[in-house]
Image (cartoon, rainbow, N blue to C red; front, side, top):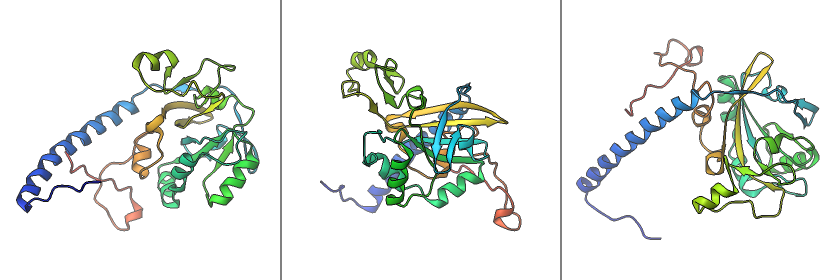
Length: 248
C-alpha cells in the first residue's frame, strides 16, 4: 500500500483547510438527514411477537426494559448454525458497558435478536463474554416481518427495501440466489408510548453496521440526542449537558 505524499507544512495546511470545508458540508448534511429521519412517520406494532430470553418468554414491549426507546440489532444466527455470524459478532464485540450506560441515560435500550434457539445464543454469548440482552425469535415471524430472514416459501423476499427485480434492474449484487432461508443483518428502532409500541426506523446492509458511540446510535432514533446546550452548574452529572455545534 502506498503512503501519502510528503509535502511542506504550508502545503499540508492548505490541503487540510480545503478538506475541512468538505467535512463541514458533510456534518451539515448529516444533521439535516438526522432531522429528516426524526420526522419519519411511525407504524404501531400490534402483532404479539414472542421472544425467548434467559429468563423465559418476553414480548416486544418487554425488550424495552421499561425504557422509552429500543435499538434492536438483528444478528445473523441461523438455527442450523452452531456459531454466530463472524461479521455480526465482530460488531457486537465493540458494544461496551459505557455505550450501554450512555444510551440508558437517554432512556434507550439496546438488545440483539437472532433466530437461533436461546441455548445456542447463550452458549455463544458466554464464549464471547458479552453482557447485553440477547433474545431468540425462534419459531416467530419477527425476522421475516423485519426483512432479515429471506425465504420465498414464507413471503416474497425483499432486502433493504428492494426485491430481486429492483436489484437486477440496477445491476446490483443481491442475496436472493443463495440457499434459503438466508440470514441478513439489520438494525431496527422502536418507540414506546405507554403500552403501545411503534416501529420508527430500520436500516440494512452497510447502514446496519453497529459501530460508533452513543451519539451515533441516538441519531438514528426518533427522539435523537434529547439535549440542549447548557452551561454546567455544579456537578457535571447534575444537569443534562449538551454539546454546541462548532462545526457549522
